[in-house]
Image (cartoon, rainbow, N blue to C red):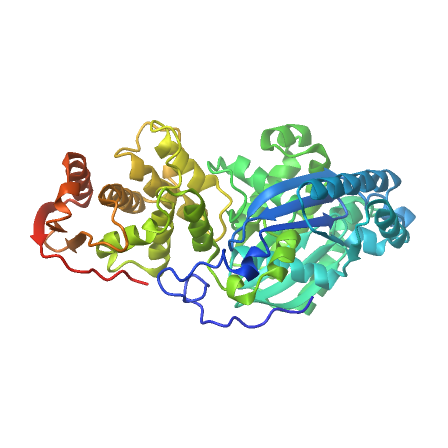
Length: 530
């Protein structure tokens, strides 16, 4: 597995993705991308063994199947040097099950990698041989630096062009990798996994002295890392869940969840001062994971103090996603994961695939001065505006909001999820009050909420015209200084402008604080932006 090459295209500032025009040509039907339509990977870790089957060749693929079995292969290794006998039995059973599942799904092969516990154990090779005899599955035992690289590539799956330090914590090890401009740089592995730390003699004082010593050596190797810190691994996600509970955070989506260094310090203290069982139940953390959280919290506290990142982001993408990323052609890696996923959803679920692009061009006059990140969200909204049409009419607005805020979409901050969700809610509803989502609305400011309403109502009106890309179509013009919204229609288009369409146009104008003017114009082709 070689280091990835430089991105072939220039990256757009603020988004970190290739400049491919307003939409670019979708790649999910390309043969090289279709080869990734059903990919199965197994991660044999020190604490868990997990099967993930990715489905769909979009840049942000769906999880067709995801199963984890907590085996604790690395438990007790510090004393015995062997894999846990009980963990080994459970892991072998898991591999038998995963092979059977893969066969039933028609997967041509499973890619299986093992990390710290198997590579360090004296009987690691014997375990791999046993799995091969029993299941026919070959386990690739990777070293710490390769583990760090694959985890970093998993982060790049969700954050193309990201800059920062990736920290992946497993049961028996902790890896660091530097990412910059879409490439993985320096990387290093350490023994700072919770299972290893639990076995250190001398209690918390000896353990913390050991963590500090190792962390300083890691800093010498990695150098200054003052950009974003990306956290990968189940123990980090458990700590993030606890942080959400402590803060009363309303959106329970771990991917792209942000913490500040101050929040980490407060949550580490919160963990120390809380009853572990009560905390576990309140946060929905498994008992086996919760047993490791206090040790991981000590590592995180020292990690933040040592590297002083500007901010901290949780990544649900790691080594398994990195293995998928490894198989992607570079031109697919260069794509925006959000827009590719939205294009895929439109092609699969919309009544008229391709209309999202027409709708975007129709409402674009309202956004002449919009920033690149905002236009990106507008594109996503237009692509998704019709994918929930099968939902019951009374619940479409809620379904749209739910999908946008909680769906497995990469490349979205939590605030952007709420903006997108509100826009899609207003695609089907004039009002957002008295819904079960009101606590989430506060995650964006009043102006962003108003902007999302305008976008939703613009899509709500534009969808009424149902314009074929090959036909004459209407045109919106927005005169912001005069607060005038002008709709220009050809004679042939006038029949589409019925009572409901007029009411929706007036609702859009009201959100803009504008007056409406209707003009009939001569037929002409209106250029569709590429």
